[in-house]
Image 1: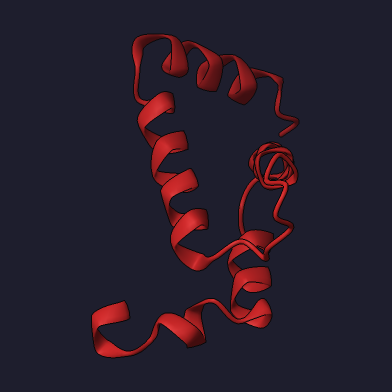
Image 2 (image 1 turned 30 degrees about the vertical axis):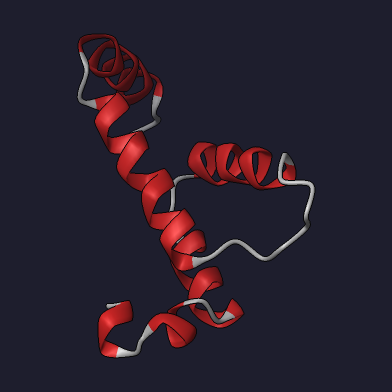
Length: 78
């Protein structure tokens, strides 16, 4: 998308907030912790957020990740 010139638009606080709010709460919390570890205090980019989500998806698709996902689903109220 950056090749098409959308990089600055995607990195805007409004877009980042919109995407961030769609994440499950536990992923929002993990991403906040990850961003807080950055000492340069820059606003996270869209690319950083998407890389984080991709990593989370890869983890959840592992053997142990599926166990965690199933246990979380079982605890979820209907």
